[in-house]
Image 1 (tube, rainbow, N blue to C red):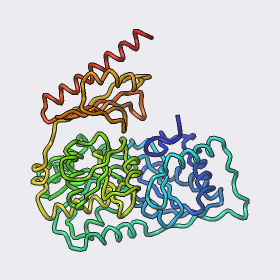
Image 2: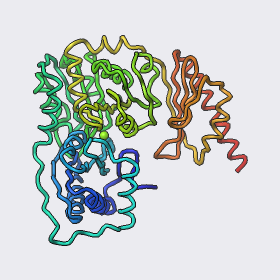
Image 3: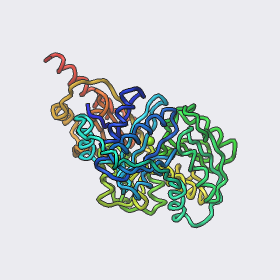
Image 4: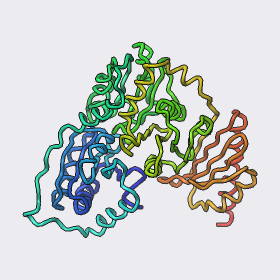
Length: 433
Ligand code: MG
């Protein structure tokens, strides 16, 4: 198992993780002479950040400390440096922490860059610099103000809108309420303090946002927004207190941007393909969307709440998305926008499966007679009235199954057919084994 998962290095905080932060610091510092670091709001952020900074300095690099900032703010600040490192475990519980590495264009370190850092860390090869080359850390003040200033450029008019901001006690609390007030919004704050803990459940999924939905309706707000711990993600609630599904949010944001070329993941709804955009699909994960946007495109995103605005940076930016959502809600009722978009029934599931050979499974799936098959991530079968995606999880020994169709019975049928074939396949493997 490599050091890097789909979103950087992550783990429960212990001696190994803290020592790893130092080693990663040395490796990054050897390759990049001037590095900015920041953290979200976890209790372990100082110990992790100082271990990281010690490593960077020991390698002879310059280091700027941006303090508590969201990941997109740190990524934006990275343009003045050779690289950036964010201390965060994103939407994981408070006992976790980790590191995300950024290039100066706001893109995450690619796989070859990650491999290089990993090799240096595992071989313990990079030695520390001679004492005379070791520098002191400096404060990098103003990262939040610079990010706010950049976002305000795109929203010159003052907005008449009331917004409830639920930062989940994460890093968005240092920026989103202030940005929206600068835009003219009336802001009601929820979970916008730092305790090192996440009382509402830090992932911005519908089941964690009951309080936000309630406060939106009770306060007569036009919009509710929720971030994850490091605020690269944003999800929203309409003025009727209803959670807006991510696929609809993707369309709403793309339409507001007047985007033509958009990038999304292979598991996003077929609605997106019916709205007149040129759509390019990638494997699941915001890093894949960001990599594809490097080749061009107006906007990209993933239904889990990662929205990328390439005009600002290639990092998913929940803060920019907050400003865009406030602007949209100031122009029209969100519920009208949401209800006017088509919604197709979607069924998702996952189950344990070790050692699946996808090509063998695919030949069984072909019995469903799809119109076409794609291999962007796992196997996706397209039908006239829907699709079925079967893919191996990137982090667990699991198969994930997703089906979407124009009608509920058809979505069930596609899902059940896929499930039956996978179960037969797994059973035959056991028999053979
Ligand atoms: Mg995150």
